[in-house]
Each structure stands twice: as structure tokens, then as C-alpha cells.
Image 1 (tube, rainbow, N blue to C red):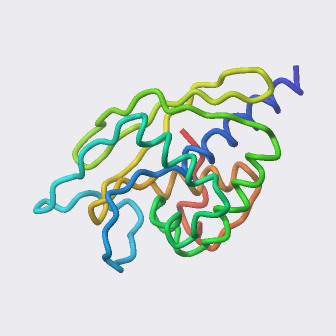
Image 2 (tube, rainbow, N blue to C red; image 1 turned 180 degrees about the vertical axis):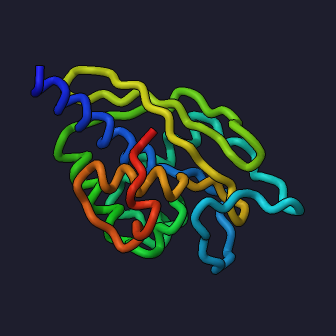
Image 3 (spheres, one colour; image 1 turned 120 degrees about the vertical axis):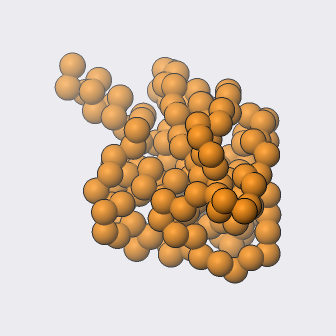
Amino acid sequence: MKSRLIRSLAVTGLAAVAVSLAGCSAKTDEAEAPSPGATVAADQPAPPLPSPEELNAKLQRALDPSVSLDEKVQWVQGGEADPELFDRIAGVYKQEGATIVVTNVTESGPGRMNASADFLLWGEVHPQIVPFVAESGEWKVEKNYACGVVQFAQLSSPACTGDSAQLQPR
């Protein structure tokens, strides 16, 4: 029973990390750094919700080592603070032979959305929900969520300091 609990926790962490890597963006050239917990400014509309297919395409790019880290860091709030983290996470994902498919995207409030996904690891499907926020014209995985995943996966990152490092995945 204990090993099943450990497997379940590992699956949750790996799935959330994989979807966290797949933030969907409407690429902009703004150099503005994201702030934790940021949402859409009142005078800036949120970008359109991406389709599950669009998020799945981003996920494939996020897990592709040939995609530049400069591109990947735009998909998670605060990601520019630790660009190498993305490839470390992708390596763990590949090593475990996991697959993930985003199945639904829903608006969860002004400038906020959730992505539902099915994560397959060790022959079992594990549903996941990952929160996103709109920032600078892009959908980004919430920093607090991403940092909770980093902590859960027993990784460390300079992108996750302060209160956000204390949070766990939802």
C-alpha cells in the first residue's frame, strides 16, 4: 500500500511538471518580467483560450531538447529565473516513458484558465488540472503551482523562492 501511495504521488508530480512545461503563449516581444500571481491588466484583454490541440503541440515543444530555453521560459511565470530547469524536468519525463494529453481547457476567471489532462505512467491514467494566468498577452502556468511541483519533485530552482516554494500542486 505504501508503494502505491508513493507511485501515486510521483505520478501527480511528474504529470503536473509535464503540463507545466507546456504553457501556451501568444508570443510577444515584450521583455517585461512576470510577477508572481499576476493576472490580466484591466485594460488588456486575456488572449484567446488555446484549444487542447494547441496545448498538446506546446507540450511536445516543451519536451523537445532542440527547442530553445529562451522560448520555454516564456511558458511559466518566473521561468526566466532558471531556464535549465525545463530540460532537467523534460529528462525525467522522458526517462519514465510517460505520455500526457491535454483534454480540455476552461476559463476559471478573468485572466485565468485550467487545463485538464490525462497522464499515462506505468500503465495507469491519472487526471490532472493545471492553472494558468494571462500575462503580457500569453497564457503561463501559475508560478505558485509550478514551484509546488518543483518542490514536490524534489528539485530546486532559484525561480522558486519565498512563499511560492511552500505551495503544493493542486
